[in-house]
Image (cartoon, rainbow, N blue to C red; front, top):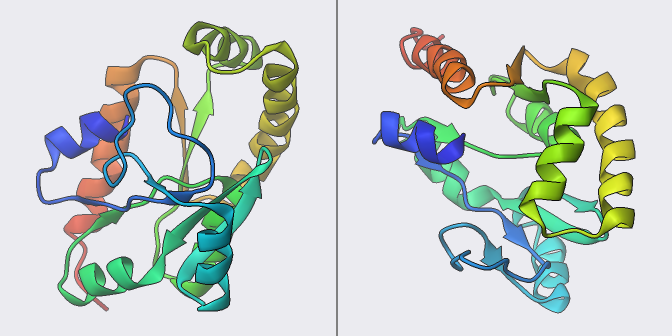
Amino acid sequence: MVHALLERFPDLEFSVSCTTRPARPGEVDGRDYRFVTPEEFQALILEDAFLEWADVYGKRYGTLAAPIEEARREGRTVLLELDPQGSQSVKVRVPDAVLVFLAPASIEDLRRRLRERGTEDGGEIERRLVEARLELEASEAFDHVVVNDVLERAVDEVAGIIEGVSTEEPS
């Protein structure tokens, strides 16, 4: 989804999150995530460097505030990939943020996708599915809910939301 949106909108700025989890095969530091040690992450928390951060599935993830603030000052639209907890934290600090919840077609579809990805064992998949059910309940707090059943259709829907936000007159 993110890659398709960035291809469609070359001026869209993607916020690269920090994480304490190890890189998966093919992931590149600084492009997919900023991979940091738990100690580095803790230092960033103490410096109040994060717009939001959370513990997710036993690892920490966070969005650095400075790059977002700079992009917004320069009038650029920024795309953040967050969990519901992080999204709500951002909405508190950036009230005009537009929140889009990407929902799976079904829990069974999500289970299939996680199995096919092959990066989690059975116990981890089940833990993620429990969390996904809770996240689906939290989707009511989002401005938009997009069902990610057919990627091209879902990308078109999110692109329409981005286009609507990008053409709004500043208040």
